[in-house]
Length: 83
Image (cartoon, rainbow, N blue to C red; front, side, top):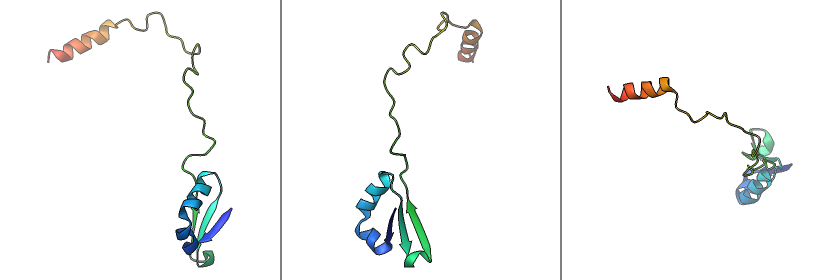
């Protein structure tokens, strides 16, 4: 954990942000923490995994007729187009 007062935080803000992004807890105190205390944390955890292209290959299947038109839905579209 890194603890800095407001003056130190203004001077070293980039370093403190890098520390927080790396998962380290950063606390900024004011008057020794008696009045206000801020805690910097990364928005996204550093251990977030990125999507892998093709990860679901052979894990998803479609019904043989998934792309055939449903007559009821087709009729509703045609009905709406005529109004």
